[in-house]
Amino acid sequence: MEQLQLPTDIEALIPEKHLVRVVNNSVERMKIDPLLDQYKGGGTSSYHPKMMLKVLIYAYTQKLYSSRQIAKALRENIHFMWISGNNTPDFRTINRFRSSQMKAIIDEVFKSVLELLIEDGYVQLENYFLDGTKIEANANKYSWVWAKTTKNYKEKVQARILELMDRIEKANQDENERYGDNDLEELGSGPIDEEKIEKKIQELNERLAKKTGAKKEEKDLKKIETDYLPRLKRYQEQESKLAGRNSYSKTDVDATFMRMKEDPMKNGQLKPGYNVQIGTENQFIVGYSIHQNRTDTGCLIPHLEHFQKMTGRKPKNIIADAGYGSEENYEYIESKQIEAYVKYNEFYLEQKRKFKKNPLNAKNWKYDEKADEFICCRGKHLKYIFTRQRKSDLGYISQRRVYECEDCSNCPLKSKCTRSIGNRRMEVGLRLNMLKEKATQNLLSDKGKKLRSQRAIEVETAFGMIKHNWSFRRFMLRGIDKVKTEWGLLSIAHNLAKLATN
Image 1: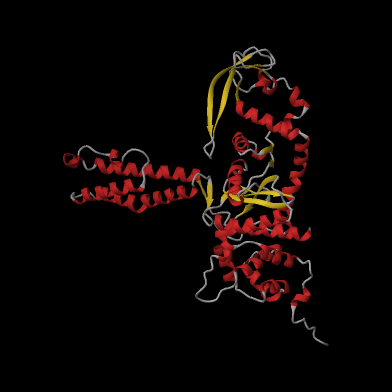
Image 2: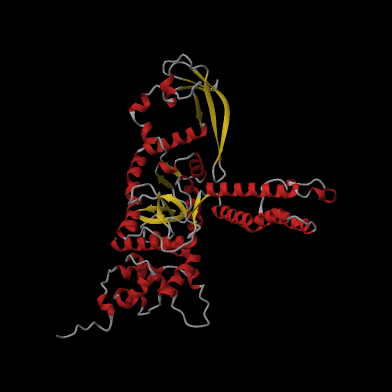
């Protein structure tokens, strides 16, 4: 039997419109000076960064995310051999390039791809379709640290330290003439931290050294030094890592525990992960960002700011679902002079006839602007009482005006109108209502209806390609910066793979 002989030039085996050629040509056209600038020359020879970038992007389009799998493909797969020029970097080199070199310049590389798409007329940054998904982190799902638990443990340790120090102080009554009648106040006011306690321990050690028969006090002080103080330090370190979050994973400190859509056990188990936000146009990914926030509401402003910083542009229209409909987000979009087609929680409910005809719905009640009061369906007046302020995580302060009915005692609809024992109360955000009304007008317009129907197709197509077709449901790297690099490579790979089909 004759052995099959491959041609000496593998160029002949690569079809003219093959995806690997699209990746190669696109990277050749890209302006990646920030990546090239990281290689100043000198020392031992290294693989060309442009070749490494081509290999990584093509590998992601082929569902190869492990550096070992990519290294193996470079030795065995003719497409990888062609795009790498028969170079065979090992898995360490590939992983180091991805996690170190690419981490600093992934935004610039993505921007170069976006500029190519704009130049070729595939995107215009006119309609920006925004949505998010949660992807599991490369972390142990049982390695959690919870903010509430940490706070409770810390308070218990602090209370125990104060108790023991108080006991030691009382045992030193014979030193009062020298030190004065000082006890717990020497720890100072405010939260008790390790620095205050260490200073207090040093003072107590000096006092006990001059005293005989203080074995019990010395034992208590040793307990504080060897047990309680290290625990307090650990809890303070955990609070620092939490940085306002409700949880984090010990194996990936940047990951937050979230509920995932992919839940095989269907028990609502929390898993460490990241909230990935993308913006699309014509099913190309034109913007992306990684967040530790569990909800989409708090991600819109950081995402758009990152997009504008990365590209120097802003979209004309933004289209998003009800998860982004908040007063803060509406205000921000309006301040940037972007047209908002962003739904809010009750948008669909408000369009129903049942909602509009419901006499107990406060949104159907008359409002007397001059008297600043609402009149319910029974003719009762709900008068203004006070204003409550709310502050978001980003520092935005919104106001809610609270109104209370004058007398609900004899109203036959009270049991259906309110669960309160007293009179009916309600909170009204006047500014929020104005912004919602403007959003409703946009959403119900012919253009709004068209964009709303298009949104699910736009964003879900990109997520479907990456999560289902390419089976990427868990990050390979750890830490938010490396995760951002990994998703950036995925976004570039998605865009070039789609470009190959056009």
